[in-house]
Length: 175
Image 1 (tube, rainbow, N blue to C red):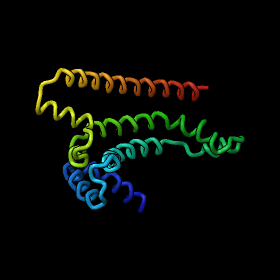
Image 2: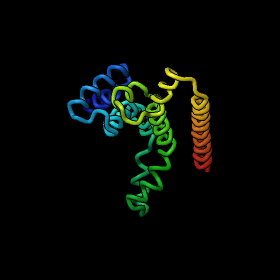
Image 3: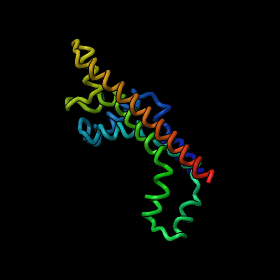
Image 4: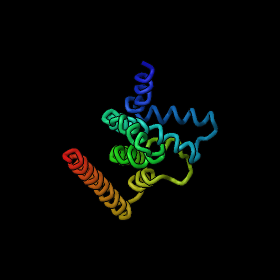
């Protein structure tokens, strides 16, 4: 019961509008006197990115065969070897997907940056927003194109890793 409630609470940033989260973080960080700092910005981005990581990793861990770790330990693998040679290779596609989703969520977030950063060096989304609002700059078009290319390449890379992983697991299951 406690695990389920903790899981649902950790997903709550997905259900609350970002403007409410940003406003709440503004007040919270102002009381802690970290408003406008890099630490405050990181807290805001982590708060919004963690639910995506939790969803992806929970799905991966649901399909994870927990008997593989004790089996490797019985055959002489040390705990760090079990982690490096058994657990991480199985969870690698989910870890890559979760990290990509967290990065894209953080990269796309404009409101948290606007509320929490203040007059600090602007993040790239804030710079884009300011350029769109105040000037016409070909650099914005070039950067936007580069971002689209990078995101597309990331998605294709993740899909290729997933297909390669599925082929490898199917081949090892057939043996």
